View 1 (cartoon, rainbow, N blue to C red):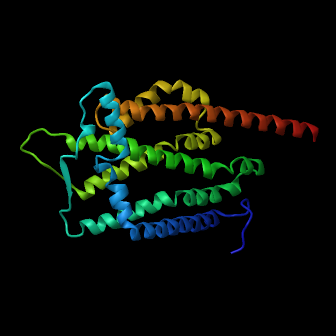
View 2 (view 1 turned 180 degrees about the vertical axis):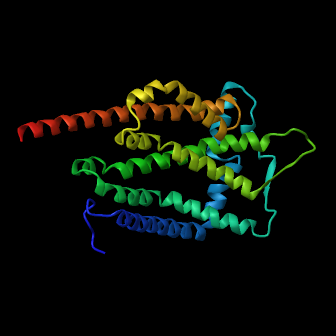
Length: 280
């Protein structure tokens, strides 16, 4: 099919174009997922089960900090008082398949974003396309930064709290593999998506749904929402919630600054268009 001008494309043409972008993005995820499936030893033993071992870098750092300030903590244990088990026939196979797919999504994220940008870019002006070339790099960087934050900060804090929590010595913690992997996956992916906040604000400002004034006006409400999100994805202790809330609040402030830049550029563009109309 020959490539049409975006103004000449019908609604069905746009849907067809979107379908092919989604197919390419899905194929990239499946290919990367197949690679993750093959290297399952590294994915599971090193990455997935890394935060379960007390030699994980985060625990070492928190243990040294605790010893420095003279506080007894569970970060200095020899091992966690729980073990991971599988209770269904297809449990390990399902965990292998779905973990590989999610790993494929993380690995292929830059290409998925590229396909998203390719679908939207024909509707942008030449100058807008030129200024948004760094969109893929910035959004990928923020996503990977968020995933690393979720993996090295949120996940260890959650495992340390929930894995050592006990209401009675009569109960032993034997965690199902699906529950454990779900915690690691949701912590990493949720953090990755939260770190995309500046990108989301950029597009919302571009289409006029958000302004810097609105972001400033509802800053207090945003703070409450951030604390709620922090409470949901972290253990219910103040230190963990503060650790998670700080980068989110920084991202919110960055988003306000980005929104200001977008609005300023739009005003400059409108002034320039008025000048061009007068000259003509």
